[in-house]
Image (cartoon, rainbow, N blue to C red; front, side, top):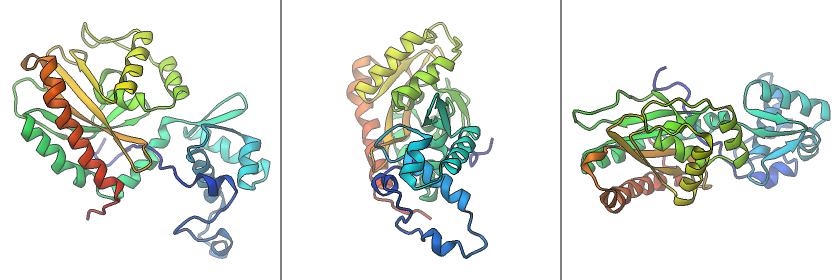
Length: 293
């Protein structure tokens, strides 16, 4: 996979009131009535995007077909077709009568960050963190149960893991992955764990789902994650979430460490604050929507 393929992030939410009221007009978006005269206009695409906007409004996590139709002023048959299509494509999941977003929708939101030159924005910050700490610094996003590395600033050292931008690793194995899983709605996390078939990569890899669930809950409460020896015996990782202007976790920032070099106290008192400062610097840029050529 190339570094441009399948980036992922959180689908931006924020105009729920207008969507729920069935109002089609959005800032910077022409009314469908005006656009319909143009041969390029696809009403079915408009409907699909409005359905995703409804689910991304942040007010609720699930809608039935009838509720979608009523909220968007759409015929029930049309709403059912849109929902069925989005489910087939993997963006929605149905359990009985109700539909909910799946993690795959994160990939749509990452296009927004890419349009801002997210890699260009984040790279100097990640590189400075690598230089300051002497440890490899990475940014990853969640895509269908995997962490995808968006960028990686590699420190020079004997012990290393062969990962580059575009590499994938199961989320349950990785400090960034656990941070990103902790940001999922509880229902999505339960669905992920139910389908998960964990494999022990080292003798320290957590493979019991009940323990993973407890660890992810602790990460959610703490706001950061530390793992040790689960991917490679001598390698540890510390990660924290990167959030957009709506507070949604869109990525994670990580330091990959040779854990024998550090005490737990040093990691928490010295490395964690530096990692969190890097997160704040990246968040300041993406929340202010700075455009990078």
